[in-house]
Length: 481
Image (cartoon, rainbow, N blue to C red; front, top):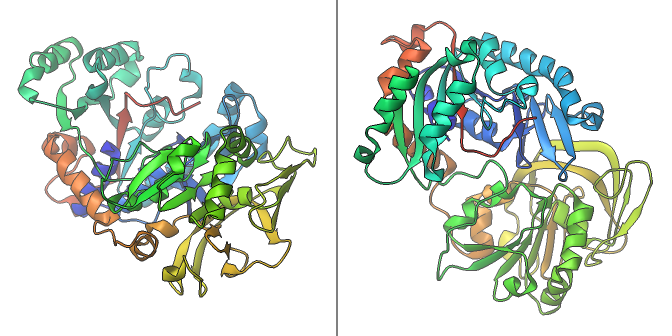
């Protein structure tokens, strides 16, 4: 959040700025030129008003279970790296991080680097691709950010500073207290004492806020909207790309659903994307949600299935990808059998932008007819009909059968016109509005002059030389190796 606000701030100042995160861990990803990156760096690039590309997040780790993950390097799945034990990945991945950092540094005046978890995770120092090692490689100045809403922030900041080696400690030029609720005057004498102990000043107290941006990973429970149309989103364990539903929250009462009874009364049920279709399909059946979805369709209730959800509602899933089975065993898995579709998996992953248009759709989807359908594909598996079924989008991108609409592209619900066609009201606030508001509120809590001084910015910002700025984070889930 802080890094995103800084990207927008420096872009407003006329600086050619870009985001960077050496290694991210998230199942919310976006398709950019060259492949996929974490949604956080996509948002930060939008904040910086530059085109996002794979160099901004050269290594993306996508969890597939408690002890396994898919490794994306320079936008593409690296099967060899994915197969390596966790600690063995470090030497394999660091060259990609260093290459991307050098390339961006040569192209932009300023980089805002987001850290991950904590730079003082001393059990992970040898595999740190997002914090101290990046700061050293970039010769960066560092802000250390703590989430005060969780409690213990002064101890977090002091303990982190104390555990760092001297060279890393010397790069820290400021502490920021983030997500603060209440009267900032009550913080005294904490900031003063912290500076006495470390020599590092507190350069900002940022208030807790509803920023309106998609979450970096997963999605927080949406705020209730009594009286708005209810939309139930089935939240299976490895649901992915939930960030694409953020716009919907402005005009609908969006609820996460994990039990059959939570579908009752919803005007629309969404089966979202999935990072592990087979596991999430088994979860649907175990929870009784598979039967509940079938019963809803039989009663005429609308169900929208997206990407992995589309694959689930078909007849069968087969192939060599881990979405179905262990690679190479050629297993076949029965789908929900709600559409005559068959999906076959290979190791190839499809990532590409989509510019399409909805067909002339029957009720209850008629309001979508002929609307633009612009988004992105990020999936494994090729799907083909096994019997007659009308197309909702051309080129095998979607099908429709009565109250069931199944679509492959992500991002369609980020179009206000599509949201309006689904729930009857058009969202008013754009992503750019949210980025501007975030910037205004974050920068109001920071000592802007001090922050700009760390980058070498003077009055003539357009003539600045290339320098770098790095924002580390505390209080988040550990997001690195």
